[in-house]
Image (cartoon, rainbow, N blue to C red; front, side, top):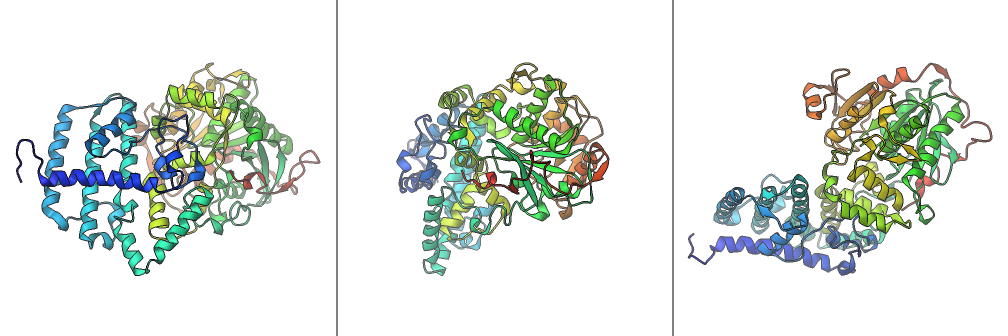
Amino acid sequence: MTSGNNAQPPWLEAAQQFQQNLISQWTQAAQAFPGAATQQAPEAAADPFAAFKAFMPQSGAANPFGMAMPGSGGGLAGMNDLFNQAAGQKVSFDPAKLMEIQASYLKDVAGLWNQGLDAKPVGDRRFASEAWSSNPVAAFAAAAYLLNARTLMALADAVQGDAKTRTRVRFAVQQWIDASAPSNFLAFNAEAQKKALETQGESIAKGMANLLHDMKQGHVSMTDESVFEVGKNVATTEGAVVFENELFQLIEYKPLTAKVYERPFLLVPPCINKFYILDLQPENSLIRYCVEQGNRTFVVSWRNPDESLSHKTWDDYIEDAVIKAIGVTQDITGAETINALGFCVGGTMLGTALAVLAARGEEPVNCATFLTTLIDFTDTGILDVFIDEPFVKMREMQFAQGGLMSGRDLATTFSFLRPNDLVWNYVVGNYLKGETPPPFDLLYWNSDSTNLPGPYYAWYLRQMYLENNLVKPGKATVCGEKIDLGKVKLPVYIYGSREDHIVPIGGAYASTQVFPGKKRFVMGASGHIAGVINPASKNKRSHWTGPAGKFPADVNDWIASATEHPGSWWGDWAAWLKPQAGKQIAAPKTYGRGETYAAIEPAPGRYVKKKA
């Protein structure tokens, strides 16, 4: 296979044409749905999820972080557009790496072309079924796609520039690669075609019905949501709402032991999600586990903001929610101090509240637990690709007079951090194969999104993600107080998940360098949610502990010295918390305290049931 000076070999032309066809197919598919041409909001030059949002016209607004994706151009010009848009500037490549990639690509394309219709896609579960391997055309298309995908990622790694630019390019290229997979289109998906033939077209009809259903509800179905109802078969731990204001309800749970520890326990979940991730089913409920351990347990249930809360700020949430919840828990129980836990953003808010209280000379919390929490925002993982000064300033201008950050748009963005698992997997199953995803409580919760007040969101972006001011003594002012976490000297238990893509393990571990008091750090297996919701009774996964009192600056040094233990971290945490909880006293017979904190309604309350 040789060519003249100006001619390309036929296999190279075919490879480039295939690549161009994939781009064209995706563009046409996106444009085929109503509203696809008008999905972008005026504040974003390009929406990375515009193609996906074509399936969901109701979701409308641009994604909350503002990444760019390529236009509809194909071939090499389309690739140049992709890299330049991802970087926000014209990119250059390492010449040596470029030559190496080019040589490898030509060699692999030649090999693929020589295999012809005997080519097989290897090592990717999207093409693992017999339908792909038994269809020579589909198998060749998938193998060619995988080759092009590997080459594009190699090109992304060869981009010259600072770390953030390179990460942005890699992220955008990966998004494009995942979106353009032949498995995402009925015209290429051999497995979906086979099912259509076997069902005499019924799977296609069912897929269209699923698509129309999801367009109506505004998001891709990850589970059979009709199976679940909050308060009926999720969030079922018995309790009562004993306090509420415009931001939250405080739930007290019924004791499951004859005696409880004198120091009550308050959980602060993230306000970006609903609290019942901590109370899905009795067998995997962290809330129920806390109650079973003899803790008098209280939980903050956030209100799903509407326009009436669109002006609320970070200060409001700290003063009128977290600090208020601490004070009400003290009032109800009569305890001088309480123990508290913060999960994800709830942990960031708890840490901020503790710093505000310390600045006021108050220490109402005896010990604190931080689960997958960022306090030091130096290492924010993939989310860092979205954050820069122009974007944050744009959000500040957008929410200068108030407004809401859509929970649906936030949920979409987080799903696209793992697009094959949380987006395209369901697009293929629901729409191309006409399948109904099985019931799964965690995915039901994941689809139950929550809005955020715009001013709260914009302040959080700048002060935490962009400027990392929380860990700079005196730099951030919250509730009128200069924040200094060095004054928060209580004992802390810090947990991070090893495969967390939202709060990287290094980001969670960084809190050990911030809090000056006694601390314990534990690493669990799995990700942001599955690592936390890992019941002790299941004896699944592992957790790691390090030498007592030793916290090197680099998390990798801590991991190198850590010891692996089978099963959940819950038991380790319960053992740590027990001596912090005080003596045991008789469990209360009623909820709340007197008329001031009388039971308002049964748990889980009405706030958690409000949809975004």
